[in-house]
Image (cartoon, rainbow, N blue to C red):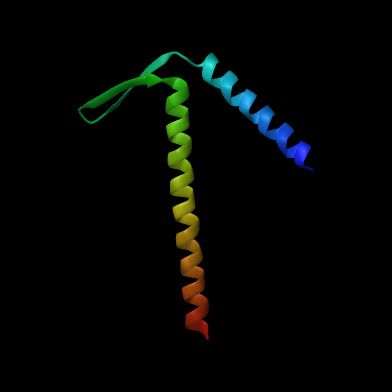
Length: 74
């Protein structure tokens, strides 16, 4: 089983590196009066991390609401 996990880690690492090197073009992002230029791969990474954080927060909030409603029912 250890070799399967190791193989998956290697495959995912290769895929991420391929994505990184195929998306080296820069992109400019503007918000209000601010703007920043960064590589596309870095932008995708930042959006992915922000998505994980917001998604995790939403799931935690929903779990809290469910626990509170179950506690109120008792």
